[in-house]
Image 1 (spheres, rainbow, N blue to C red):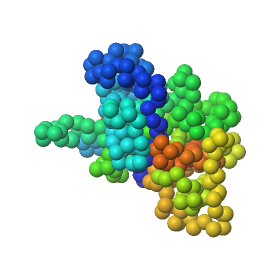
Image 2 (cartoon, rainbow, N blue to C red):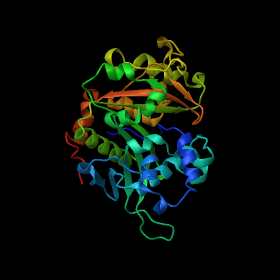
Image 3 (cartoon, one colour):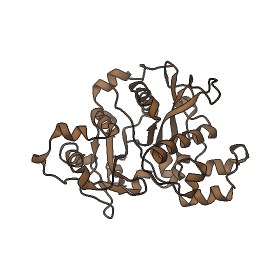
Image 4 (cartoon, rainbow, N blue to C red):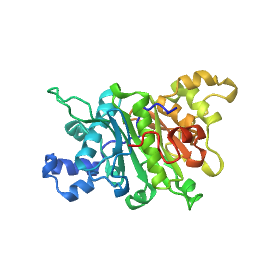
Length: 319
C-alpha cells in the first residue's frame, strides 16, 4: 500500500559550504563549534514534540535525527546512493568528506530509518541509518530565503495563491540498496504522515528525478505526466523559463499508459499512487545526470486508501 522509494532531490555542496569545510581543515565532529554546526546543516530543526520514535517494524525504527552526528551519518548515506551508486558527480570537497550536503540542511528536519539489528565491521550489533528523507517547512524556508526546489521551479505564484496554507518540501530521498523493501518505504511514509499531521501541513512538493539528461530518451514517461498528471488551476507551477524543458514530447494520442508507467522511476510511481500532480516543464540537472520534475501533493488530495492504511493519526507503525 505504500509507494516504493529510490531517488533523490538533491544539489551539490554549495560553494560557501565547500569553502567553510576546507577552512575548518575537515576537523572531526567533536572539534566543530556550534556556529559551524548551524551553518553547515548539522543541527536538526526538529520540534521537541517529535523527538521520540515515530514508528517501528521489527528492527527498523523511523524517527527524526537527534543531533549533529546523525545528520552527518544521513549525509553519508545520501553520498553513497547519489554519488557512488547513481550518476552524480561529486566536487572535490564532497569527494573528500564523502557526504552529500548543502546549505539547506540546516533548515530541515531529517527523517531517518534506523536498523537496530545491523552488524558492524567486527560482527557486533551497531545500529545504522539505512534510509532518509529531508523535510523543510515553509517557515524555515522563509528564514533561509526560499526552498531548494525554487532553484528549478517557480513556486512563488503557487504559494501566493494559497496564503493560508502550510507547505512542506520533501527532498534528498534515498534508501540503501539492501533495504529497498516495502517495509522500509512504508516506515518512511509513516514518518512523513505523522510529521505532516503534527505540523498541520496542507501541501507537499519537491523535485523527483529521471535518470538521464536527454528528454527524447524520456519522451514517453514525461509526456504521460504532462498529459495525464499535470497540476492545473490553483495548484499549477512551472519550471523557470531559462531552465524549462518541454515535457509534451509526444502527443496525447501516442501515449501507451501501461508502458509509460513501466518506465517511471519507483519514487514517481509512488507519488502518482498517492494522488500527486506534476508541474509544467522539466529541468535538466547535469551535476546529477538527471531530468527533474516538480511533484505537487495537497494533503486533501491524498488517496483515502493511504489515509486509512496508515491511520488518521499514523497508528499503523506507532512505536
